[in-house]
Length: 185
Image 1 (cartoon, rainbow, N blue to C red):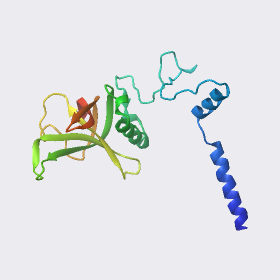
Image 2 (image 1 turned 30 degrees about the vertical axis):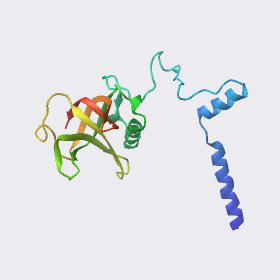
Image 3 (image 1 turned 90 degrees about the vertical axis):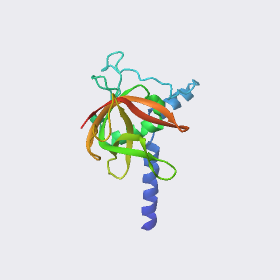
Image 4 (image 1 turned 60 degrees about the vertical axis):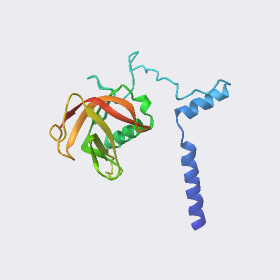
């Protein structure tokens, strides 16, 4: 009986693996069978469907109010995934307007003796994933002149931030942040 059960599990696993695949894999197989070069997914473009007018995109995070990536309209899992993608492929987001909500956090740099450096305070909007075990945040710089703590909310407060995504370098490392940001408490 155990042998029959093991064989059944193996067959079930193999069947589920055989069913896995995506459109790119099928396109590549068709393309290879006709001796055409395989499409490059990194350079492919989304073609509008019959339901979409020409020139429309199928980007689910783009909104009509000038926000290129609106994380406030996504599920917690999708928000976490999109922020991860921002960290992993930041060049794809440079110059885009991002809107996100999360908890207000700060980081103040320290010198080699552990003393706080007063002019190096970084502000961030931190997002937890769906299970609230992992968090990821994005630094932001408010537009205009602001002083901490007078012009900022209490640590851990829920905030919404909108700003333009940019990359910058500090001490030989590359970082990303939202600049010209506006914050809603």
